Structure formats: structure tokens, C-alpha cells
Image (cartoon, rainbow, N blue to C red; front, side, top):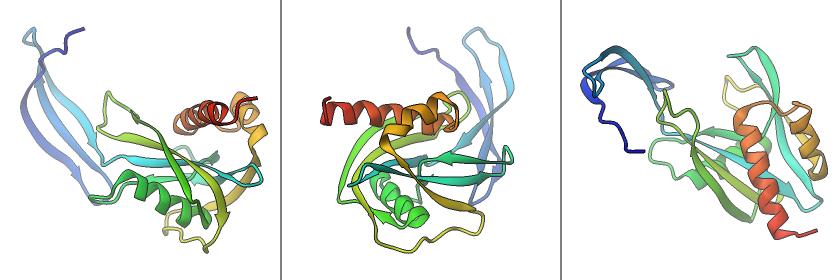
Length: 185
């Protein structure tokens, strides 16, 4: 399919804060239709880590998510800081949220996390031989508890929807596939 030519007639910030930037675009479609309020969330993206210890435990977190008012079982993740490389963000988030670090890192993917309304890319990483080396450093809005789970339990956690965020499901499948390639049965 050829990319359609959408013409931006105007673009203005609707929300512009350190934590959220949403712009309001006026778009003209190829057939002349004008979309007067097309909102896009601008984002530097985020990094998520599937970290495994040398005892085959996966480093996860229980984290309160205000948007859905629930505690979710997830993989460590966070927004890229200004001009931060995705790998550095992944390493920082693993250390800050869990106190774990890892000597071996592999990029699994960079994918559009919500392409219809956001510019964000999700950067997924596999971290091997992770171990507890630091105290945690949570932001004021983060309510997080460490949750180690056996690697063998991850497929059931996804299947039973105990891992339920789309980003966590995506990295679980990508990491399990990569681990299968690294450690054939």
C-alpha cells in the first residue's frame, strides 16, 4: 500500500508539560476532507526489560497504574529521558525499579506502541544474568514491588492474563522466542 498524503494545515500544542505533550493537528485528507481536531501524543518513547537471573528467575514488578486504578504484574520499564539512548534507559529503569543490573543485554525490538495517536516507540531488551546490586530508586508517583517469577511460569502468566498489559505481553513473547533460539530444547 502506498502511504497516503495527509497535509497538516496547522499544528498547535494542546498540552505541553514535562510529563505529557499532546498536539492538535488540523489535517486535510487526499479527498479534501478536513479533520479539525486530530490529537497526537508526542513521546520520546520508552524502554522495557525482560531480565533473567542466573537461577532462571524473571525480574518483574507489581506496579500501581493510576489510569486503570489497578496493580499490574509487569516488566521494568520507563520513559526515555531527553536525548537518552534506549539501552541506557532500559538499564536505568531495571536498576531504579528493581535494584537489579545485568552484564549481558540484547535488543529485541523497537515497535510502535500506539501508532494511530502517538509517536512513541517501545524498545524491548533482554537482560541476562541479572543480579541484585543496588537499592531501588522510585519516583514519587511510582508504587512498585519487586516480583521474581520462574522463567517457566511466564507463558502461563500471559495465558491466564496475570500479565495483562500489551507492552508486557509483547516483550514476554519476544523474549521467550529469543531464549528458545539461545537455549534450544
